[in-house]
Image 1 (tube, helix red, strand yellow):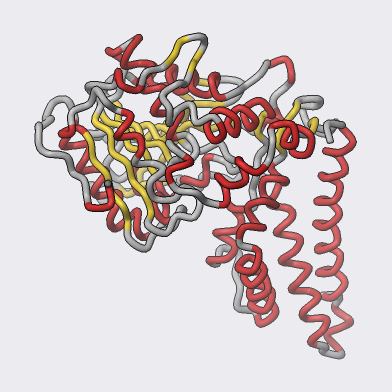
Image 2 (tube, rainbow, N blue to C red; image 1 turned 90 degrees about the horizontal axis):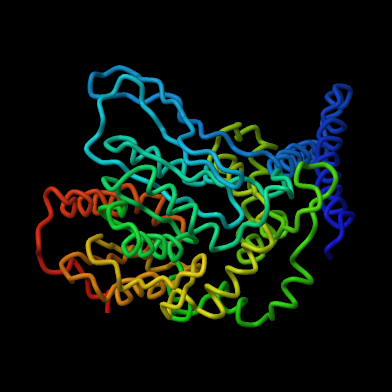
Length: 425
């Protein structure tokens, strides 16, 4: 599979489907057909419109779409997205609200690099920007990074997080969503031991695979079923000639998307069939619920092969974080060295990606942390997406996280019993 032509063939197939949709929509919408109305032509036009949009979105990075914010003065203030640190594989960006005084909380939101762009956390950012100064890790699409930039694996990822935390200073509160949770925990432990003055005030881990074996899901089972040789042979490709990263070995976003879709194939098929019928009846709009969700969900990015393979091998198969055996740049990270950073874990009761039990394992690894600085929450009825971007996040989880930050900031920290619910174990 590791041939330039293979990647280009996959891209050509995507491009062909986009063209097919555009052609069907144009043909069925030809003005002359208005003289003889035909439901089949109406359906073809709707199918073409939905199909073209679907395949077009797969190669376009979504816009953050956060342009203004209404402050306490009742006025809309412009929001600037500014780079704080620029690196080949990621930028640290700030959402700066012009004309607003500094907020009482400075938050680093660590976005996942698991096939989607950081814009997947758009609604999370919007909810935090209300009363926090927000910074986000904006990971780059590997296909756009020249081979000359070098490799990028889980150790490099962790070092990026260490550098970003150092840049922002010890007053920050860190929130890691899903995939980066174990590596953010490792980065915090790294700082706690080697540069304690740069460690954050609090760390919140949301739905992350700290211990993938704590509760099996389709994702963790897949990691167990296949060998590393099989993954490297069938999942890794070389970027084709169209992009700056030509020749770079990657795990293609389109392949990752196929895996995402197959996990809930019936639900996705039903959603697209319903959308076609809505377009046919004239009930759809450019920013309706379907398009808002799938414009983001279908926009995928490539990951470097070394990052994808090292994640599967070291985080899922060998469980180096769960066993406290993770090494960064030759230094063995000891999570037990975290003694002054309050840690909270959040899980969704119906999360089918990082099932309840996987994330809370972080608290047991923090052997040097007093119980008064540990907290855990399981959100009833919430799936994976809901715990950081849905109603469950807005109404229940976000207020708890903000309260946790305020309670455990170093200026107002109180030593109270752990905030564990019955599901914490």
